Image (cartoon, rainbow, N blue to C red; front, side, top):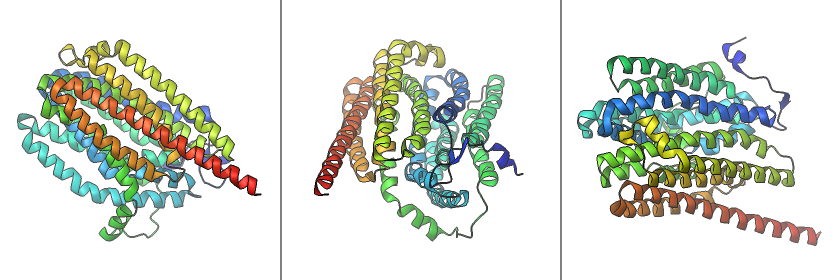
Length: 436
């Protein structure tokens, strides 16, 4: 038996009907995919207080900005595979068919990474002064997460793969980095360790969990076609990534270094919370989409929205009530987020949590990526404009509230689209029944 077979969790029932995806009870699926993102986030949470204190406000602001831009680069590299590829993998009848989807994604993403990663790394190395090496490494470590395989594991309902090849390497790398940072005070070990864990885990996953090559070509032309064939999903992800990553780069232009540092702390709390949104969405998606019949699927979609609304409310309450104090404890009083920033982050968190199931469980599976793309584009353009305008007058707090407003607008537009589409579908169904 191969090492990968030892890591594959045993399904309770053989497979979902019509697919090769392991069938898991909802509670176990939620436990696996909701807890693993938190486990992967624990190590950075422990280490970032050391990084923020060792680097000071200026260094902390630079690291956070490089990480935000790197996250956008990762979105460009991923180019929508985590949106459309996950559904393809979930519906693939065999592991070999699913692996073929993964290999196509890897070709596409490596091609984009070959352009995006060195370009941004050089820009940060040259433009960050004395922080050039640290910021460049931070950018690269964030950008290469676009090569992540987590979406593939979600599609195949294999939380054990995420634990073995993503969470465990990251935890081990952060432990080593924490020791080196405490002893030497060298901040660059943090992004270097993250980079090593991401690349090493991806290589091990490719070797142990992806079935053997099926003879498909790896030339540039094929990689380019794999990318351009899903331009809509890629454009959707990039449009959303631009305004999601915009607050810190905008603050670096419009606000003082100290303001950028405090905004970075609030932004980190917000993004830690997003692990919960991602975990809940991952745990619920296959359950929702595997419902047999329109009524059962609709009930599951409503249940998913309700669960995300509760999570969003909890996140909002946490950030409003204890967010300011939590940022001071975690990152240090000198870079603690202010009240205005944490409240804005809480509003944004609630909106993102509630909009996530509308996209992942309703619009994308329902063949409406164009609606999501249009909504995200409008929200992104208006959101960046609002963040810029408020940032000019109110500084970092204005940028945070501009970001919150853009997420609320995105939720309103998506919810309106779901309601309109649902009303039209019910009307067509009624007319069809009357004609029969």
